[in-house]
Picture 1 (cartoon, rainbow, N blue to C red):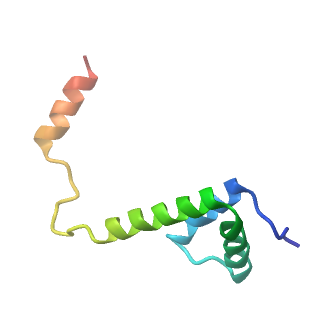
Picture 2: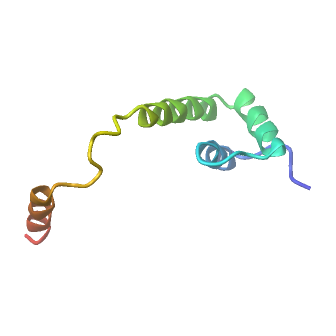
Length: 80
């Protein structure tokens, strides 16, 4: 049986995980209880959601691949 109260480390891991996959009902409940009493983790959850929302609204027309000229400059700097 899972413990009811979770640590801040577990809570932050759950906050990150919930952006990529659904949490179980028990994990959602445990996270909700933790966030209700831990203001720092609640702030982390809020900031994480803001970042996730901003990333989701990025313009998809921007190429994901780095231009070859930028790649060459980075490699040149790393070799110094």
